[in-house]
Length: 111
Image 1 (cartoon, helix red, strand yellow):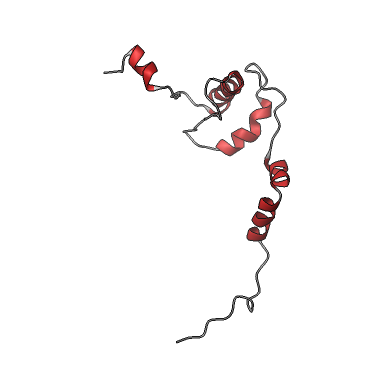
Image 2 (cartoon, rainbow, N blue to C red):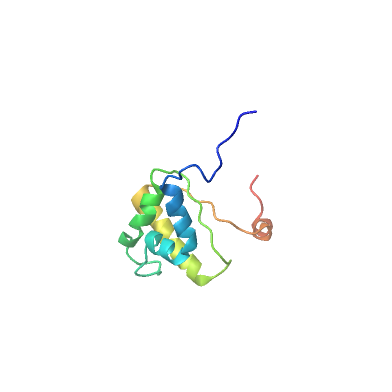
C-alpha cells in the first residue's frame, strides 16, 4: 500500500481559497467590497447607479428578480427601476412576474 504524505507536511499555497476564507471571517468586509450603494430606491431615479448590476447581468437574456418579502412597497419600487434598466440599457423585452395561483384563477388561466 502506498504511503500518502501527511497533510501537515504539504505546503498550502496562498491563493483564492485563503481570500474566500477571509471573506467568511469578516462578512462586513466582504460586503463592503461587493456592495454598490444606490443613491435612491425610487422608481424614477436615474439608471447610472445600476451599472454595477448591469455588469453582473452581462450578456444574459434571462434575469430573475426576487424579494425578501412579498407585497412590500420598497421592493416593488426598486424592482420597477431595475426592470426599467433591463429594458432601456440591456435590451430586455419580456418579463414574467411571480404571482400566487389564486390571482391566476381569478383572471383565468390562458388556454
